[in-house]
Length: 89
Image (cartoon, rainbow, N blue to C red; front, side):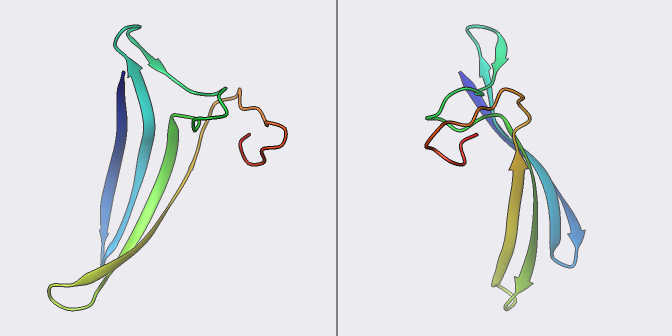
């Protein structure tokens, strides 16, 4: 199995950056197809599609700090809530 975690980011200038991610995209070389996890309660659902953004703050010529975040979703229709385990469905 081959797993891909990909990001595409764009610099907007003045220390701002936005982007998109595809996380946990799995390909089975045995089956020659993409796999998704939409039924298990032990592994995270995948693939996930996310957006991200960040802002860089310069502290000096050689130092900076970055503050950012990421938000995403799984677009599989088969997600189920598992009784007694909130947040997994």
